[in-house]
Structure formats: C-alpha cells, structure tokens
Amino acid sequence: MTGPAAEGPFERPAGGPGELDLVDDVPVRPPPVHETEAREHSIEESFDRIIVEGRERLRRRWVDLLVTGATAGIEVAFGVLALLYVEHATGSVLLGGVAFSIGFVALLLGHSELFTEGFLVPVTVVAAGEARVRSLLKLWVGTFAGNLAGGALSTWVIDVAFPSLHHQAIVSARYYLDSGVGWRTFTLALLAGAAITLLTRMHNGTDSDVAKLVATVGIAFLLAGVRLFHSILDSLLAFAALETGHAPFGYLTWLRWLGVVVAGNMLGGLGLTTLLRLLRSRQRLLDHRLAVQRAVEAAPPAS
Image (tube, rainbow, N blue to C red):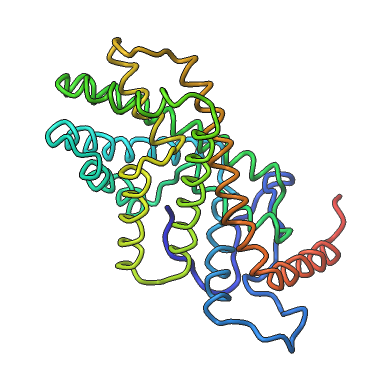
C-alpha cells in the first residue's frame, strides 16, 4: 500500500531505449477533451493520485517488484502470527480477524504491496494509454512471487518460534483448503478481491491518514474475521500448516485451491470494482489517451 501522490507533472528518470514501458511527457491532469463538461473535484483529485501512484509502480524493475512483494509477504505474516495467537488463546475467529489487521496496517505504513492491490491503480494507467499491458503483467507476476516467497519464509520462522501454534495453523488452514475448488470458494474469493480493491479506492479518495487507517483495519477484519478467501493471506496460513509437517493436505491441494482463488480475486477486483471506477472516470481516460497520442506524435523518431 503506497503513500500519497505528489501534484503536478510526473517526472520519470532517464532510461535507455526500451527500458520503460511508460509514455513520457504526459501531465498528471492533461487538458480536458470536453472543456464544457462538468467534472467533480473529488473524483479528479482521486484520479490524480491513482495516475501518479500507478506510474511509479509500473516502472519498477524486477528486483524492486520482488523485494517489495517479499516485504509485503513478511508484513502480512505478522498479521497471520497475531491471528493464530489470538484464535489459539480465545477460540474466536472474530477476535483473530481484529488481530490480523496489524498486518494490513504494516502494509499501509510500510508502503509495500500485495498482489491483490495491483488491480485498480496500475490498470487505470494502462487503460489511460500510458503503459503497456506487459508492464501490468510484470507487476502482477513479480509482486505475487515476492508475496509468496516472503510469506513462506516468515511462516517457517513462526512455526519454529511458536510450536504451540502448530495445531491452530492446521485448523485455520483447513477451513480454506477443505472448501475445495467449487463455486463457494470462487465467490468468497470474488468478494475478497472486490473488498481489497475497494480499500485501494478508499485510500486514493482521501488525504486523511486516520481515514486510511480506519479503512485498512475494517477491510482486514472483513478478510480475516469474516473469512473471505484471499490468495495471499490464506496461502500464508496454508504454508504455516504445511511447514509443520503434519498438515492433512499437500502442496498440490494448495495449488489447485490457489488457482480458483486467484481467478476469483482478480474477477472481483477487476470486474466488480475497477471496471466501475473506470466507467466513472471515462472522461479522464479520454483526456489521457489523447495526451498520450499527442506525446507520441511529437516525439522525435527513433534513430
């Protein structure tokens, strides 16, 4: 979860030919295509933040993507530790969900990123014509791999440090993996994807740190306390169980489950939340696409 955006034109670092898949020299808020059409100030400001943040994220190199993703996996693992400890001590899933929110607060304040946060912001930049789809795919793959790697390492450390939580890790993980690969799993994953993309929308809709913190805790509770199916959070629970050596399921079971959940997360985040946001901001998208076209036409021919 990244921080607030700066105002004004976005300045990119110099790079060699083909190093960046972003179009240069496009202002954050280009001249409107339809100058007489009324624009909502709050929507415009939110879109400005999305464009600046998305540009930053889409220009990351592979190593930056992997490190940022791994950091997020480690931070979420602290939330998993809190969840397991509280559920073990109290037997309450709801209290465990509240405890888990520390992991999402760490994401917010640490400016790291989960795979499921890569829907609204970078997709908007691609839809605006400022970046290529391959940059988006690179962001998703790098962040996803980093999330899982950082989370797997952290849950192994948790298992070694807290053997008393082994049974709870298995119980918590079985709730998700025992659901199989049916429609219930898919729909719970769809809701989780929509929820975390809604969190991204809320973060970009305000400059208030308090409001962002409240939204973060609320969505984290919804994911862990209500037990929506989130590909990264629940995979960390699966890792915590598998690494004990006593889980009644294996990595192949987790992979089959993960495929369905990733698909649900993406459809929920992209279809239920991001698409509606893009439709709401369609005039701004037209502004950017025209500005990109003009920037490309004005660029000197490649030597």
